[in-house]
Length: 85
Image 1 (cartoon, helix red, strand yellow):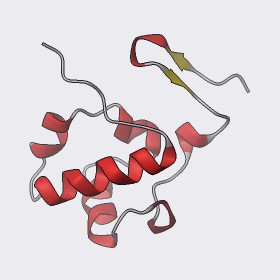
Image 2 (spheres, helix red, strand yellow):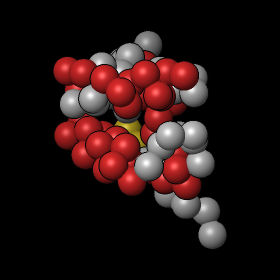
Image 3 (tube, helix red, strand yellow):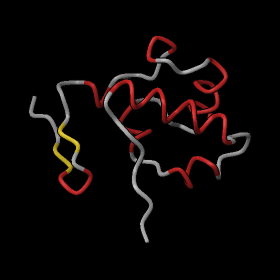
Image 4 (cartoon, helix red, strand yellow):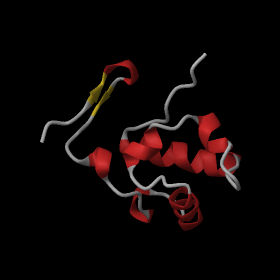
């Protein structure tokens, strides 16, 4: 299967990582996994398509949750979508 390439965000997908289900093993706390799942964010691809503002707008999602997401994604080599100006 050919991996998608999103040039404007400089993501070069490595295999099936884009479709990996978010898990505690990736560094996401359980409360955060449940919060993301409730908002239909289940895989890495769903999460990296969101900006910080998109996430902060979610109910019960605060600065600590945002910090956990950014740290966990960074460990995996990903980041959130950049804010559009």
